[in-house]
Length: 213
Image 1 (spheres, rainbow, N blue to C red):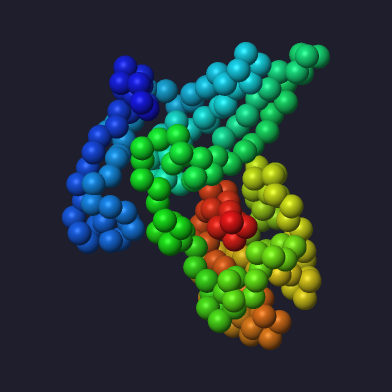
Image 2 (image 1 turned 180 degrees about the horizontal axis):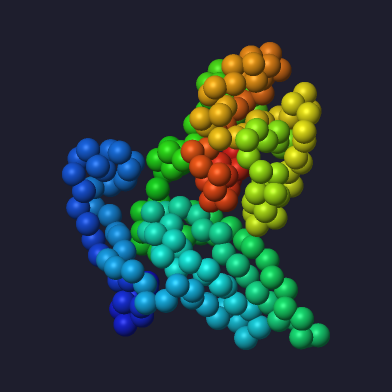
């Protein structure tokens, strides 16, 4: 991104001035950096060391996330001495992105748009969830999706099928809002409920990262 000849290969970077309303909606400054066009390639490989590479499986998404000051989930490949390839998924945090660039960091409050707290009185901050072992009960979200997010983020989280054992309930917003019985039970047990807009690895990963910050 900082190398002009190479920047065009990822779509180019330009300054854009937003209207007051749009800047407020996005939660950003009025002058921001955006990608100019589609990247020349769908996949990019960063050679970090002779035997270590970072794979950007979707260049467009990686660049957009970086420019927004958001975190990106990247694939790390390492060739061992025994010539085996180890593949891991890691999260590049917002503060690391900001430290390595002049792009303004996007505040946490502005990236909450992809999820909502269903039971406001049981907010994660009010019950010190961040100091507890995170045990998630999934409602209307695939357990396989959650397992993949946990594996990619490399976080210590337990999945449960019993609400009474959960410290957090997450699911699709539209389904959670309709289930008044679940909301009542969660309120009784002081369990926060968070709903994501879509069944998306990125949205669930953003939510979990926010909770564990």
